[in-house]
Image (cartoon, rainbow, N blue to C red; front, side, top):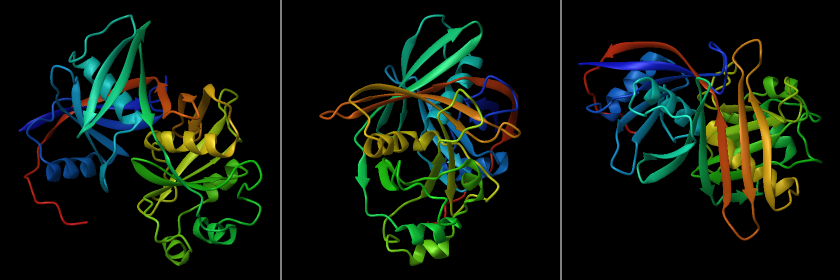
Length: 310
C-alpha cells in the first residue's frame, strides 16, 4: 500500500530554509516499526504521522526521527497543520481558530490563522517544569561539550536540568562560535558527577544572533546527533523558557522573545515565543511561526517488523 506525504519547511517564510519535516497526512494502518523504517528512509530530522482524530481532536500525531520516536514539539505541530490544510482535512479560514491535536494522552491546543495565503500556527502549552540545579561543574561541562574555560556563561545565566515531559540539560554559552564548536562527548558525560541523571539531549544557547529580529540562538546536541547537524528545537522550547524564568529574574507577566536555530547560509528557523509567568501558576508557553510546503509524493509501506528493545 502507498502512503502520500508532504515535505514542509517549518518556521520560515522561504522555501528551502527552516527545518525540513516530512508529514504523512493519512497514516492509518501503519505500526511503529513501519513508521520507524519510513522515518529512516525519509532521512529528515523528524517525520510526522497523522491519524484520524475524534469529534474533539482534529488529529492524532506520532513523531519519529531516524533514531526513534519523539515527543510532539511546536515544529511537528506546525508541519502537521500545514499538511492538513493542503490536503483539505483542515478547512482554510481568515479568522483565528482553535483546534486540538493529541499524542497519546497529551492534548495540544493549536491556534491557526490564515492571512494573505500564509498559515500561522501557534502551539499553546501549560507546563509545570521540573528544575534541578545539580549539574556538572564548569570543568566537567567543558569536557562534555569540548569547550574552553571562557565559553560557558556563568554570570548572566546558569546551567540547569529542566524537564517538561522530556529532560534537557540547558547550557548558556557566550558566543555563537562556541555554540557551533560545541559537541557532545558521551564518554566525558559518563564520567561527570551528574551522569546518573536521565537526559536525552543538551540545549546550548547564546544571546549573540545573526538576525536583528531575534533574541537568542539555540542548538540541540546529543549522542545520536552528528556534529554538523542542527536539528529542530521546538520540543525543547518549554524547558528553555523555564530556564529563562529561573535564571534571569523575569517578572510575572507576559513576555515575548524571538529565537533562531541554524545559520542563514544553511537552513535557519525563526520562532516566536510568548509565555505568561506567574509565581503561583503553571507556565503558559505559546510557540508560533510560518511554514512552507515544498514537496509531495508517495512511498510504499514497508513490511511490518517488531521493534528492537532499546
